[in-house]
Amino acid sequence: MSLREEIVSMGRNARAASRKLAILSSRRKNAILQAMADELEARRDQILEANRQDMEAGRSVGLSSAMLDRLELTASRIDSMIRGIRNVTALKDPVGSKISRWIRPNGLEIVKVRVPIGVISIIYESRPNVTADAAVLCIKAGNSVILRGGSEAIHSNLAIADALQAGGIRQGLPEHAVQIVRSTDREAVRELCHLDEYLDLIIPRGGEGLIRFITANSRVPVIKHYKGVCHVYVDESADLEMAIRICENAKCQRPGVCNAIETLLVHQKIAEQFLPRMADMFRRHNVELRGDERSRAIVPEMKAATEEDWYAEYLDLILAVRVVSDLDSAVEHINHYGSHHSDAIVTGSDKAARRFTNEVDSATVYVNASTRFTDGGEFGMGAEIGISTDKLHARGPMGLEELTTYKYIIYGSGQIRE
Image (cartoon, rainbow, N blue to C red; front, side, top):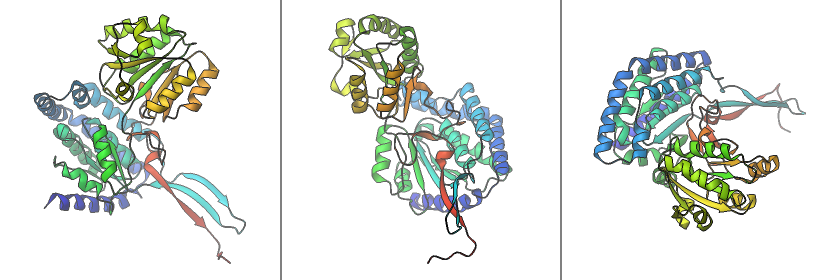
């Protein structure tokens, strides 16, 4: 069987499975998810061994530290995967819920109801935990899913997917409801992009190159974000101790993720007081600072920032720094150079906070908190399928509701249109 034939067969089987999934009760879906979590626990050692193979291969080909961090599975990360499945199990099932209802003058009752999207493909790189997160969210929302992870995580992804399938089938998961592309041939991505006969949606997760390729080549609707150029703006009224803690967390906790900040903006009135303390903190974390002229006049050891630095998603211990004249300048910078992902203001002014949240055009906007909270689990979604910077039909972290669409059900008593 050719790769094309294999992908088409997966799509056909996923469509058939989606029809069975769509009518499963919430109780049955929850039992399936619990069994998936149990099987991950039972196969913990096998999954860690598979990940060890991927990590060794990744080091041998020179994967970056950021990529290796995304790839690595630890005992605590497996615990987090299992906990995420159990959290999703406890969430309210969106399928079948009534969004709205009204009655027309002719007596027709119109009900807008949430329903599954159908068949979803998740195409992703590096992070093996996406295999579990994507599968369980799709199943809970009544969708079948075709997973295609990166070649660098192939052993980990297959081990996790096999566990999910085995556990789910014991509790009535329809055959082919969760499938994973086992080929590492890059042509598989193109074939999925052309599978509009069977796929309803593609969600890519990975580097900007992968996402732009999928968006350019897909015949299937795509929900995505290209990159995370996230900002913290420290306002003139900010609590500077709070600002330092937020900047430290937002940059240093996990610099290789999309909700880590890449640019720090500082109001000119507090720059001389704040920047030296900020630089001392980042120096302890080995963060390379690249500043504009005003920043470098205060902290001379900063490297000179270029125009490209304001657009950069470093995914590393590098931070661009700019002193701005006022809130207007900060908002203008973020809306021009940012990626509409996650941006934060640190301020003691309610007025400044309101203006920032109203005027910054991003999917998630924070007041006095780290951008690192842009995550489905942190938002109480149990897990996330991805983060969208699109405006149709989902924006920000995507959970169960974002994996549904709706239909109208109309009840009549013999009405005909005159």
